[in-house]
Length: 491
Picture 1: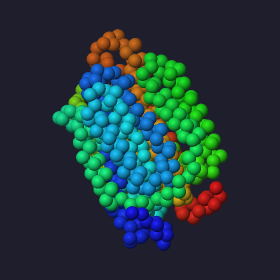
Picture 2: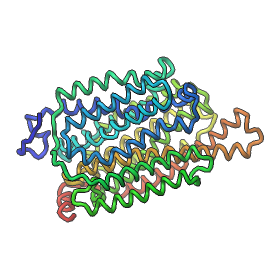
Picture 3: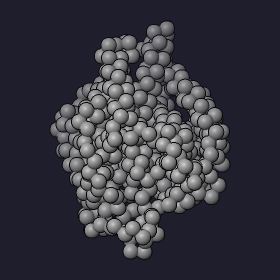
Picture 4: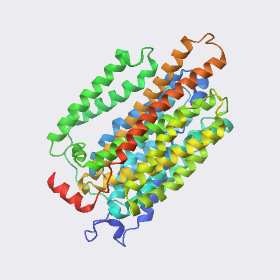
């Protein structure tokens, strides 16, 4: 079933289009797919013991997931123009479900990692599908609240992942992290097959093979290089680290140059000619890195120096995760009413203050302070991410929607991989330096203090990024439809 009614500019205004089933179809599948981004964070220690692997090896469950997403997401703009909404969603959900089943049954770590990477293929394509469909369905004046619902999925799902992970791992075992997802994924496929219609235009643009090669090598090598940093004793000075990073940067540069020369680019980078879109992308990257730093490092800090269980660590993060999800649609509605400045300036100030507070964590920090800090972090993120992203996308003309969403969703795993590897690398380097100069490096108390020193440094750097976000927020303005039309004609 498709819709080709040209009477309505936006399909949500067409009474013949049932918007709610379309939204439900997409959100159910995407929620559980995106949930897997952080579902394993607290379980990493358990997996190390189960498969007798090191921390740098198990890290690939997180960074490998983001690497594959970084490779497949750039081609989403092309796929959105080659296949119908139904075909693309059902295909990606089927791939994701297959990967989940492989993970649940994995007898050894390489099989588990393979299933995880297959999951990433589906997840990497689902996010741009959702963004593109909702941009087509709803006019700019109504997008804030709608994109807030998308924010519920994109932010609440990965935020609640560590909490669910801690409870499931402690009471059921790590395999149930995947077993519990399978029935929901199957239901999503069944529901979408009955209710999802095609809302996008299938134009089947020319496929440029060289762009695909540059994109795959560029984003893949870049993420791989950063992900390998933690495995090498010399870190970023190791040629097997900086080599792939340099190769990736070079390939991405060639990819970008080629896109500007093509009439039908794989990824139209002309989206960066729109100032509020570029502004939103920079803020988006800062927010993603702040989130990944907390969602990965806080559980390690709580289970390390503070000595609490995985389940308790997950529960500590639960209030912030719940508030983040519940308030995302509210923040979107406030964006529709008041615009981006009212949302971004105070929330970026709160983010900076929270990062500074986290940089003062130590072995005597009470749990309630971590709960409050994480709540403030997630509230500021919910007030920043979707308003900034929606405002940026609102400035794009319709034909650039697939490319605008593809760029943002490509940068999410790239920023995540860079953030994870850099922050873990910084934390490890600080820990090792502390232990080298310690009188009794084998003492558990000394080891705990070493990790505290690493966490303090990571959050101080995150504080510096948050200050940059605050400065950027001072220059934001609402992207208006008339402005959009003028920019579209000019470019």
